[in-house]
Image (cartoon, rainbow, N blue to C red):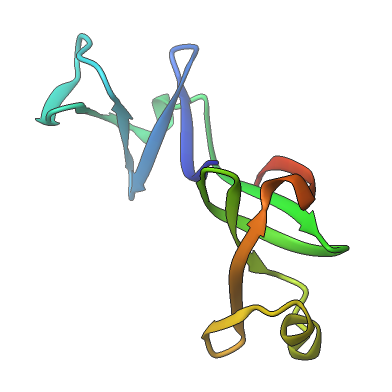
Length: 120
């Protein structure tokens, strides 16, 4: 499940982190122009003008007929956050109030429908 920025640079897609006029590109293995910041994490900083595409990617789904963001995956479960905005529905679904107006829970993966990535 992806939830974060991505950038397309020189025909390849990377995890990314925009920072003003630059974008940090990340990859797990060494490559020319990338510096190791810790084992399994390499970064390259490029001007945002050189990036072909910069987008925010989020995984979304429906569970029990309601819209959710997918936050994490563990074995046969998905950690989901309700985006329908109705507290009574969240309560009916048995979701925890993570923060004021923010409802999360674990959904069995086999009950989730329309799982997909969206670009914002």
